[in-house]
Length: 301
Ligand SMILES: [Zn+2]
Image 1 (tube, rainbow, N blue to C red):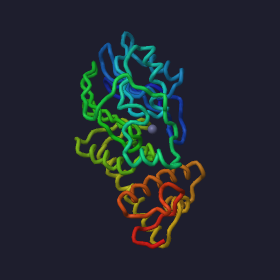
Image 2: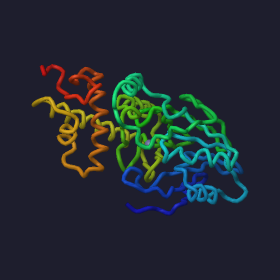
Image 3: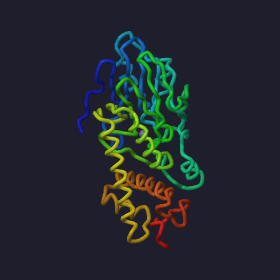
Image 4: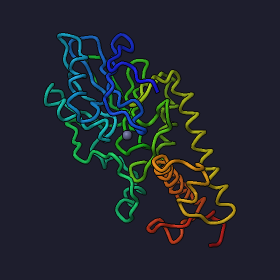
């Protein structure tokens, strides 16, 4: 992976600043975007709480310009962590769907309350936006109108932002990797619904939270939907022979992975299993409240 320059002018009125937090989960680091051509600019995703990144964002602002709006795609620390400090420095309000727990589906709220479901990787529990954005809400900004789209799947409070002929897709749709869906924040059924919601909109390039520009949003979304459907089929196939637990299923579907990737793969597999159980395609024994054994719905265990 070749890391581009920290600050890049992607087109007139769009600057990308890459945070110094590269990792296997964040690729070359978090992308912060600065939108607009006037004196006041809009920032999408402050990135992690990191003074070096904060400085890079402020230095990337052309002389005589300032930030008037801070939009946050979701409350993961690598996106929202720097929001408060940037807001203090610039005076701009932080705008998002809600705090880290908002927008969760009923099943995930229930699982989080009643089970040891795990998850919670990188969640920013301290995140409190100044302004709450609703699904479909148009924000009038000096960079022009921006529409907030509630798109849970990677996280319940995830928003994508539509601006001119572009969509800022956060961690929902990325080019370099499929998105981590780790319950209870991640929700496979919500991910599918969010994908279909974006497919109802015109096809535009995507500016993701990590990695490079995706030229065709629709092509990438369709590829990711196919990828998930294939994983689902692999799980059902593996369960044809006998009931299996999560660990064995993850290995059956993903093959042998190194431990870090295996952990993420197990979270994605769990998301599929909850989704399949919700659709009554599989059973979990004793149930999802323990570490269960999964089987096809028609099997007797
Ligand atoms: Zn994230």
